[in-house]
Image (cartoon, rainbow, N blue to C red):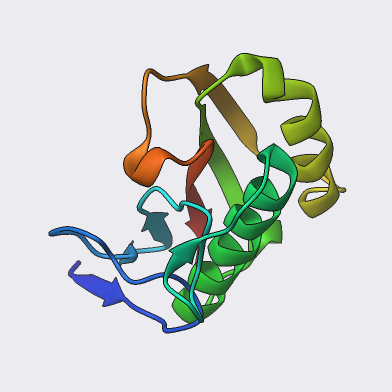
Length: 126
C-alpha cells in the first residue's frame, strides 16, 4: 500500500514542508487547515465566524481533491486559540456535518500559525 500526495489550488498552499493531505489505502489524512483565502493567500479578516467558515470551505476543497468529502470524515481534531469561541465555532462546524457527524476532539492551544483563531485537521474515507 503506497501513499499519494493530495494538492489543490482551491485551498491554501502548504506554508511549510508538508502536504495538504495524503491518501493511504482507504483513508485520506489532511494537514491542519487554517483560514487562508486560497485566492489571496491571506488570512481572512474578522473573528471566529469568518475564520471558521473559511477553514471548513478549505477542508471541503482538500477532501474533494482527494476524492472524498465531508460526509466521509470519520475524525476531526479542532484547535482553537480561545475556547470562549467554542459555541460559535460549534455552530458553524455543525452546519457542515448535519448528519452522522464524525468523532471529534477540540482543544485550546497557545498559538496557531499566522495568528489565526482556528485550525482543523481530519481523517476521512476515500
